[in-house]
Length: 233
Image 1 (cartoon, rainbow, N blue to C red):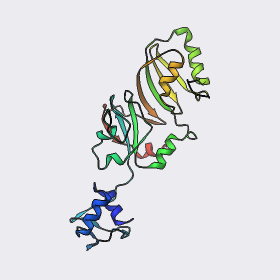
Image 2: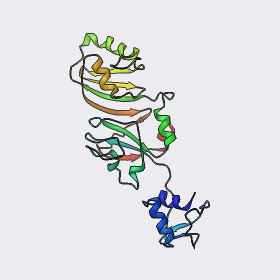
Image 3: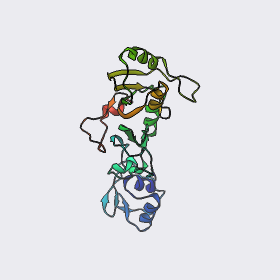
Image 4: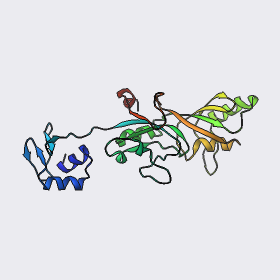
């Protein structure tokens, strides 16, 4: 890895500011001052900035309990980005794998591993996403079997040519259901219920694949994924 990139990926310095540190002679490799930004850092090299050892960060995999009124975006807009909740270096360089609306809460996966993120979202992987849904209109008991079958068979969404993929609907109460889908169309859960003449008034993502939201995380809190959770995707 080039030394300027090494500095960028092991500190909060931008690549440009890293080069300035190099030019000022503030970086050593195995005790020798190196000013050449293109210098290839050998494996096991002792790299130091102003005498302090630095190491490249490994890939990061994070679960966050998204609170209402935040955006799954890399910039702060009308609402703050969920990345603003992460007190880690260069949080805004991370990628949000599977976005949620501003008013939707729950599990968000965040990483800087693009391939991992792609696998999680790939239709081939068919990674199930389970949502807890609160409905404006309670489901009539006599209609529940038919509604479950409609979700399993696919629902025609407005302005969509094809039906949604089979989805699993589990009725907890007439006004609260669990819905597992394997795709991510725009506002899909809300549109599926709207197509049946109902309205979603609360939406919370509980699980993606086998990765379930840690019940100990309060809204706005996060933790790194375990090795098994990472390997599950």
